[in-house]
Image (cartoon, rainbow, N blue to C red):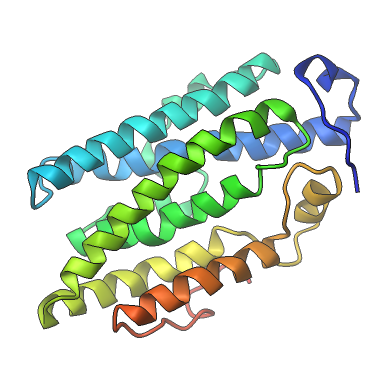
Length: 237
């Protein structure tokens, strides 16, 4: 396991595998940070049920675009242009879950609770990243990400106060849950092992997915909802 810490000035001295892996994972990160705002800015900022919800969605979009900017700045310092990612259409996003519209307010809540929580777990894996510029920006981003998740949780709790809302919440969780598990990637991913070997990420895909389930499954059950089949509709087991 690689244990050195790499400053910006030392990046060019690193083996090609390290450089390729770091750039690859950061390109996914900058793309996914724009995925959420792409989905809900168009449809839910004006249609959210309360002014408070509208404000929180605008604040979330602002923060996630800023997260994109902060990771993009690191890539740009490494000579990687990211402007084309900013201009991508929704259908061109890397992760499938960011390509489909959020059709109900319950889906907006499930997105915040489940999908944003995946983002939290990925960010946590960067906490001790061997590339110090990445590790340095993660703590403050994580604080904001937890607030995004809390908003999604609150939406689902409020919905589950009525039988009709609970049915909407169940449908939304059924839709989002497989996508959230897929966002961790394949359990047998060789690249995931190499990220860990180089100290870029802290856990394997399988470890992150299991830790995620240990957090999110009790929350779903605590709402009085049924837990979806963790293998149904999955692409990456």
